[in-house]
Image (cartoon, rainbow, N blue to C red; front, side, top):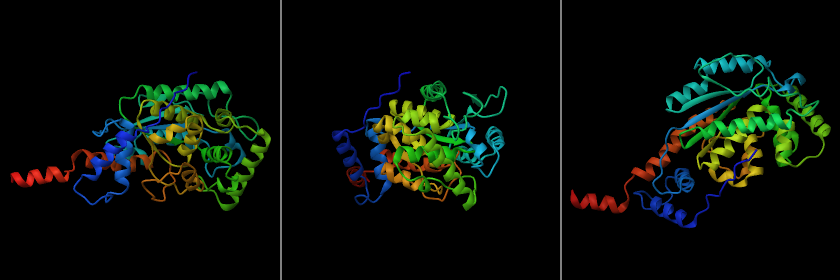
Length: 344
């Protein structure tokens, strides 16, 4: 399987042209703050000063996790498929936020432990009915991990737009994400784990002990795909593949919260230049996400105390991308304003 090769967006000449275009707008220098940084980033991604966003989409990948058998979630595994049904009924938060912001939404069954049958609104990419319990054995075989990566790449390869957000659903996936975070950043497990779906303090400590025991069981490893296959989930692996393909296509990548950021840890270890394409939508309230953002040296657009997942942060941040693109494309320059004044 060939993985995408991602080019850096570094372009000093274009960066200078973008800075000049932004600074010449009718405003004090730097007065639009993070929107100016965002406009420059989008320009470098799209390789132009005439930036545009079209057909933004959010992909929500759903899958189950065998590690739920260790009692690491406040909710039973069946909630995963029930939430997928909620997505398909257009009743979840991500449905509301995507709808209000004119964003296409695609739900993908990456590996849910449930038979949905043929559903027009559900993309069936099920690798298996959930991963194995990584407290006892690797979560995925190499073949399963490769299949998930390939599905993610194929899905993005068929998209028409140039902006993509990533969401997820999977009971137990904060445990997988915390394990990935620990292995890929070296941050102690205690600083990676959080309440997830609402664990008590005692439950968080239990989750920590499960991860620590699993890390000891599987021993040392450094290759990112080995770490992904051992501790990840099918939805996380598909997001990794989707991210890599999206960056190869020079799309703007909207990064959601803790789970999606754990997928980015894997992708960035493989292709560091992917970070040039990433816009971090928000800082999740899930313990560990702020440390992940520090690892990426990232400045999130929003900080709303969210910890829902589903890609909700991406949908809420999308209007800020439009604002950055629109001011660069539509706001008057001092020169055009003078010409307009002279002709009035």
